Image 1 (cartoon, rainbow, N blue to C red):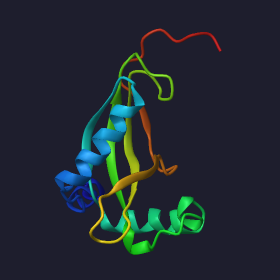
Image 2: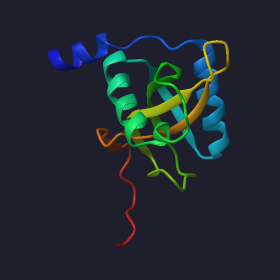
Image 3: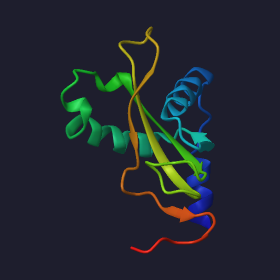
Amino acid sequence: SAETESAASNRETVSSDIEACIREKMDSFEEDCTLTGLWYDRERSERIIDSYMEYGRGASNGVKRDDVIVILSDLKTGENTWSFEPNAVYTDWNWILIQDGETSEWVVDDYGNSGLNRIAVASMGAVGGI
């Protein structure tokens, strides 16, 4: 669709230092979870930063807006997970990174979905009784 093509055209490549920072944070989750896509979208990043600065950790941690970036990703989960839906694909997962001025390294300050994400179950499997 035209909307999908437009959204894909807004995706910019992520620098290797930011990608390494996000992968290191993911490794700390110790869950069966894999990044399947990682990108920067200026328009969406700015909207999420607005919310982060007003309502999120940015409202209290003293970070300057210019020292915040949001990276989007897709994640695929396996069986061994407790904070994600098992065997699912998460789209447009947010990684909010901050730095202490232009010369410092980026660190992941927050992450999650913005409420705009879809969760598509990759394989239905058996569903437990609820």
